[in-house]
Image (cartoon, rainbow, N blue to C red; front, side, top):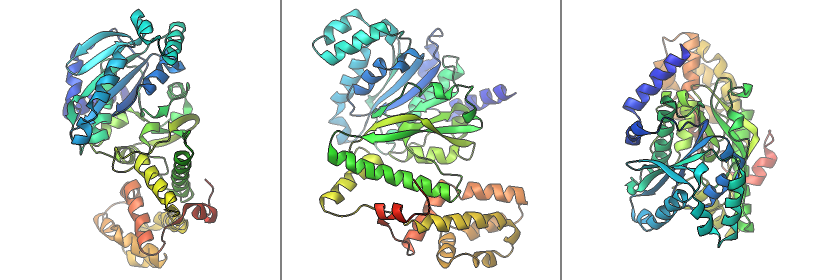
Length: 437
């Protein structure tokens, strides 16, 4: 029954919500079957992430890597088009093209061309990689998706690139070409450990009732200033999640696209990645967390290349660049006041008796601090209570968790900040917090 429901859900998603690229898979070779699938969007990237995969233990684990080589349709994208062309050509040189349809090309790494070793012999690194490839039991492939010849709308950005890759993975699972029920979403700056895929095997009890997983991570750069700025930003991310955990929020997880994996059924139920130029991981996880657990895999550690960037409007790259600018001016990087998470903890605890007081919400509010009362009013709690006036307790409490989700929690935090709990230097906030990172 569960398999039938999954089939119906994926079929509905593929019919009504998937990107057009899935139609090109109609002729995908039936004999090309993979245990795992990884999706990587790539814009203005070097070939290093492909080199890492080919020389890693992952290449032996029957994996299909879907690389969505893309560029935005603005001038910034067009001036870097050659980067995308070069990357596609490099990937094609790593094996034999066994299938092609429209803007999709399948490169089977297990049949790497003999001439490829000769072509790359001038560079020691590539020679070593080809040597390593010959000694490995290589049974993985790379599916190249060309979204640079036909550019991606700028406003849809990386969200659309990730969605195209994930939708292709869902379709290939539906046709039996992918065995695992997990899609692994990452980025070109991620160094994936050898246990990255095996941690998602069906016998892992930690995945029970999980709709998504987030791996452990750390940033690194050989450039001291970049490394230091990334360390500050990483500390901020860990501080935020630790604060949510302390408050007992059901939305306490990292929202980093390069460490995310998700269950295919949950992905279809959530209707896929939102087509946004940034924040697509945040909004997808916000929906997935309402369908199942977001499990943190502490023992799967991904190294992320620390690098400033302006390719997206917000996220790690722009944040690091902002921190570096502040440091150059001698200004502290400020972040959320630790008292915010204490207020959040009190509110979430008070939610447990809200249903009993729904007829008199003002009396319930009066038991909270003045600043939390104002913040909850600002985010629309009273309107929510009015809409749920006839709900029974179980339904009310379920809808309250769904309503006060990751996005609403962030709005509440921002309201507290704007009402007086102002940001403070990150190191001081961590020091004063009632919780540990």
